[in-house]
Length: 512
Ligand SMILES: [Zn+2]
Image 1 (cartoon, rainbow, N blue to C red):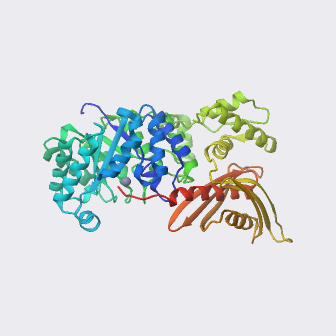
Image 2: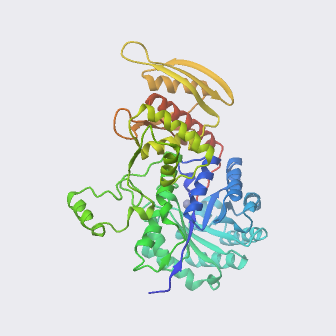
Image 3: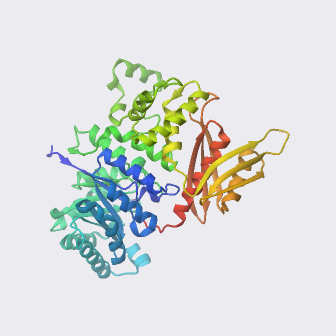
């Protein structure tokens, strides 16, 4: 077996992941994810695309200022304006700032999108890398749609950008088209045909359109790549990106045949997955590898028997290795602040004193209404009280009348851009009445795409958790809300989605 290599994990949850429909995050939410990635100890955090909007710029700058440890990357197209703007945000990370510039190299992209020749693309790529190099030694270059690029041309571009100073060269499968054996050959070709390839780290960035992103990334590592770009829960454009947790746990679990390690502290994986779902409202399916609700549940009787006798019978990795601890019950109305704080820590939350105080007040109120408190209740409290901070629109008070006799009416008091507004409307049902009233008070043009209600735990005293998906001009946002009263939870989810939609509407989009 080869000597063990430490693979660099480049997390792009905040850039590529955040670009997936409905996944947009505000600055506070991005910072929360960034700190979780810091705990995971990824090597690089791609914090955003600074020129996309002022909000994106601010987010990259804040992450560059606040996060210690991982390098902070910012994406920019291969032009001076993008690169200069990226460095303005990244410079706060000092030596840990990485400029990540890109241009497409496939015929289909060069002809139809860029309308540029081989020589023009090559020259633009080299000029961009040199420009970036003027700011930092830490420069990554990506050949967009590399997988569909003529290999001799790809090799020429890679050699030229390394010569110009790129220290990482990324080979993306932008459209999720390749298969493992083919991708292995592409990386091998570059290692053989690019004279200066040893002067840079080969990175890969795979999309999951055919469900092969992790497999393709793994094949690239076996061919000599040294960095994988990935996201938590595999979120990203279309079918998403290579999933960080699947790749990292594969490397950890199969060290017997794979000679790679990473610096990731895997025990923080579960908390990272949960935090991202809470913030974006995008849940992972129950059978999702590593982090799905059923990933460690051995339902079938025969399996259960085996697991009880000897865990390794059916368990290839332990739940503890990703930081998943058995759902214990827990806390009740007599539980003190100490027990509460300790349980939050065990669940992977790292809250400051002020946030802990706020969450504890909410906990006490809920514990008076509800007999037993489960971990899921604590998650909902943290999500609703700490993580989902209302920005432009905020619910102050509401009351709803409904039933089989009177017309359902919602009366709502909200804060809209700092001003208090109040209104009441009739609807088909209480949720409809609430949504109509909020829509009127906020002057929103958004249309409702989906609305879901779920109970967080069993029992009629459970908190309700609602998800709302809104659309305006082809842009989407997802909002969530939790409350023991499901109409209030619905209204909170609707308002949360409206707040997110504002972020999405003001942003440029790129694909990589
Ligand atoms: Zn991508």
